[in-house]
Every structure is written in structure tokens, then in C-alpha cells.
Amino acid sequence: MHKIGILTSGGDCQGLNAAIRGVAKSLYNEFHDDVEIYGIQNGYYGLIHGDIKKMSKEDFSGILTLGGTILGTSRQPFKMMRVIDDVTGIDKVKNMKANYRKWGLDCLVVLGGNGTHKSANMLSEEGLNVVSLPKTIDNDVWGTDMTFGFQSACDIATNVIDCIHTTATSHGRIFIVEVMGHKVGWLTLHAGIAGGADIILLPEIPYDTEKIAAYLNKREQSGKNFSILAVAEGAISKQEAAMKKKELKALRATETYPSVSYKVAAELREYMSNEIRVTVPGHFQRGGSPCAYDRVLCTRFGAAAARLIKEQNYGNMVGLRNGEIVPVPLSEVAGKLKKIPLDCPLINEAREVGISFGD
Ligand code: F6P
Image (cartoon, rainbow, N blue to C red; front, side, top):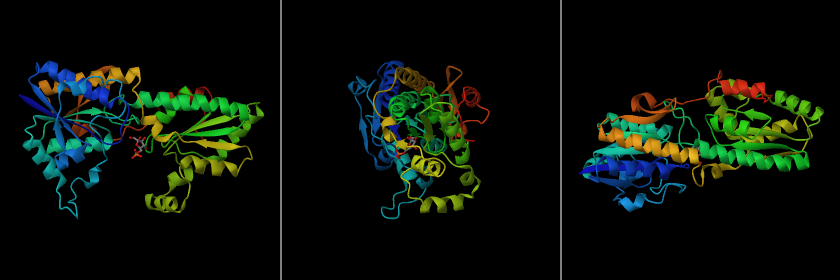
């Protein structure tokens, strides 16, 4: 009997259940039902504390379209993994290894983003058999062209910008729509283009408020009575980008803006008297059913993960490269971030249709 543990870790996203289902159904098929699947609750937390339950085949039925994760999730920062808990004295890594052995697992399947992959690689280096799947609405996992969750979140963020368009035109206002993504701007870039935003501000391209204001004024002079900015959570000004990390942290501590969009709005008000409104869809972007693309991708990733387990090809993430699902060594994935390259064709094409990046 093969025993496989499965967990979902980090921020949730659409498609987690579709991917869990893909792994489970393929495992039952690959092993002709000679397999037991153990659901580890709330990510690595469940592995640390032994919160694990045996799943039945039925648990994986009817969940293809279900949002969230049936296993629960939590954030367990990688940098804290080797820190012994002051109060409880818990050694997290020791506990995870002990629980893996106690439950007699042959492999741990991990669904997660960047932080999750650092921990997955650590567990693999510690001798556990690990196979992982890349999830996040940010699409910033190195080694895969696409993470699941991204396309669904992109549809939602695009819909927000679409809806804002109608109210922005009615009132002749400037609207700032804040899109999730602290470190990378893939979601903002795609949703901004898909939603027809006039300006897109990304963490990868520091902005200049004066340039944004000049662009907005020019648009107004050309007869457009409204403008829409798609702004990533992690958008940063040129002055801030030039600061040392410590200096920036100190500045952030003095600021009282609820989020970056309010800051951009305040900066723009220094240059113009137009009405400016801010819309922050926030975690709405991570909720609800996965779109068709993600359902397909999750199914492919799930089947590929089960195949790797059957072949005992551990220590890999399943990734999408040029349309093919391929194994990518966890040691290559861990610790890297897939940012938007500045020579990314999409950025150039966006500029060609007149979109400004505020630079
Ligand atoms: O999981 C990725 C993400 O949604 C980012 O886009 C966002 O910046 C962050 O998580 C929000 O984190 P939390 O769910 O902890 O508020």
C-alpha cells in the first residue's frame, strides 16, 4: 500500500481543489487503488503538529470547481522553520520529519508558492520524498511559465477594471484599481492590458508621479474625460526604489496610507485637481471558482505529479514550459522569484498601444 500525504500552503487561490482532485484521481488510477491519501491540515502547520487525516476517494469528488482548499492552508514563513519556538520548544523540522515517518508516508505532495517551495526543498534535502505543484495568483514561481490561480485572478481583476470603466466614464474621474502582487506585477500587467488600463504601475518599473500626471493631463487635453490606473500592491516610486532597504522601511513606518493606491492618489493630487477614486478588490481576486484554463492546468499538474510519484522521481515540482508539463528540480526552484523581465515583449507591446508605465 502506498501512502501519500498532501498539503496546501501559503495564500490560497483558485484551483487548489482542482489540483488536489487531479493528484488524487490520478494516484488512484496509477496505483490501481493500492494507495492511501492523507490530508495534512492547514499546510505545514498540520505536518508540524500531526494534524493529519486519512482521506477517502469520495473526498475528492465534486471539488473541481470549488474555490479555496478542502485541506485548509496557513502561512509558515520559511525563515522561521528552523527557529525553535520559544514558548512550546517545538522543533518544526524535527516534528515534520517525525510525523512523515509516524504516518508511514512514501511521499509528500505540496501545493504552494515561493515560500512553500523553499520549505519543500528543505524537506527534500532532509530526506523526505517530495513532489510539488506551483500555485499562486502572482505567477511568480520560478521554473514554470504559469502557476495555477493566476488566470482566474486575472479574470476577476480584469472584470473589476471593466466595471470601473463604466463608472469612470460616467463621472469623468480618474480611478486607481489596486491589483494584488507585492513583489511582482504579472497580475497587474495582464489585468491592466486586458481591462484597457491607461497606466500600469508595477514593482519592476519604478514610477515618477510627475510623468504620470503629465500623461493624465495629455489624455484629458485629447478629449478623454476619464483615466484608469492599474496599480500593483508593490508599486514603488523612483525615489523609493533608489533608497536603501532600511531607509525605505523607516519611510514606510511613517506613512499612514491604507495601501499604495492611496499614496499614488495623494501624490497625484499635488499635480492635479481632477476627482480621483481608489478601488481595492483585495482578496476577492483569490476567491471563487477556478476559470476553465486553471481547471485544465490543475488537472494536468495533478496527473503529472502522480506520474512522478509512480516513477519515484521525487524532489521535483511540476512546471509548465512551452505547453509541456515537465519536472523541475526543487533545488532550482527554491529561493528564486520569477519577476517580469524588463525586456518582456508584453511590456513593449503595451507601450506600443500607448499604455504608460509611469516611467
Ligand atoms: O498569495 C499571493 C498574495 O495574494 C499576493 O498577491 C498578496 O500580496 C498576498 O498574497 C496577500 O497575502 P495575505 O493573504 O497574507 O494577506
